[in-house]
Image (tube, rainbow, N blue to C red; front, side, top):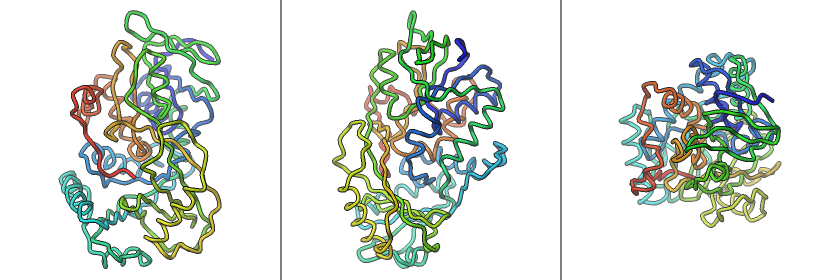
Length: 382
């Protein structure tokens, strides 16, 4: 492994690989990406892989809207030799409480200002889109046809191959053991394969981002939280969109291959690094899914797994340079939606690092908001 680089990126998921590509395509040379296991082995490879623009903060909505455009043309842009399998079956977000419906109205107003084609629809209209939807007690729903689902392994592979063609080096099965600083600046990254001297480090390792920041003497306001998911046997196509019920803490999507992927959030999940699967989750998700989508009651589960959200206090990402460790940037805290906003987040970060004009103010995602209390607070996280 080389012992000097212009840029060292820590993390080989959607964020690390897309940032590597965006820097390289802008002419940056000598970039090294470090991954402690294989590419997509962290949160990216364990996510539900949905891509939606229906968010309640302008920041997330902009990143998602622009990322959807990137997903739509990603095979061509990255000259991918396979297919990222981006299918725009839409997202149907259902509401069973009045408070939730009032929030949806606010969310859609933001989305419309940004040109996102979300529709507010009646329960019967929602049932026309998903015929097996339980509309008992349903107040209304929102639907955006351009939302969709992609294959996270193929997306990362596409970025990996495109970045590699531009000269980026990828070091897998390489763990970071330390960050060296001198006079308030990063000088090198220590790894299990040796040290790399560098003046620019990008911490893109999701739930482990806080651990990396501690190596640089900084406490990042971020914590890991387990989220579990399952996949069923494949069946004939019967559900086009992803269905989300925040009231039931549920998301459920039929993949292009026929299997259903689904998960529920647990409000009592502790803040730790546990990624074991549980029978309590299996019971919970089965209960919630068959309540919202009764047709699924006879499906057989193939497997279940878990991954870790990198939760920030307001469920918005942290994109900023670390105080007292100049040259070290954090791209983490995506709170479960890093995959869907990854492509355009990488553009924003690359623009900022290179001093280019950015398409939106990156300062909105800065660390100062936690000091001042001016949080963004995303209301639409499952």
